[in-house]
Length: 99
Image 1: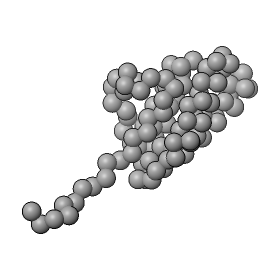
Image 2 (image 1 turned 180 degrees about the vertical axis):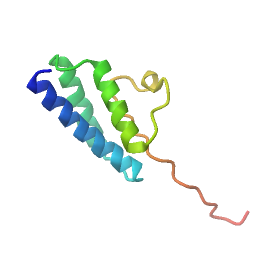
Image 3 (image 1 turned 45 degrees about the horizontal axis):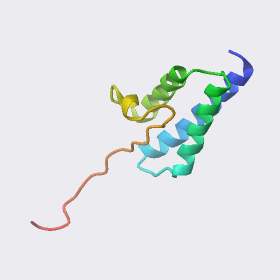
Image 4 (image 1 turned 90 degrees about the horizontal axis):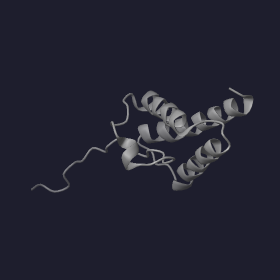
């Protein structure tokens, strides 16, 4: 893999990790952060540094590391490339009334 491709993948992994670690901790990620990452993913593919499939596999591996579980099978059908899955952990729900 050329040095440019190594740099691009390392940068994407840094961005994905930042997004997924924040979401896994219950935080919020600004839409601009996801959109910039998605734009970078498109640029990497357009420049021929990686394929959509390779980036999707790498992103899924990063998601697994951060969340401890993988994405649901077929998730890419609902969120086409280059969308970054922005699912956080589900917040606990407590009743606010007595009934």
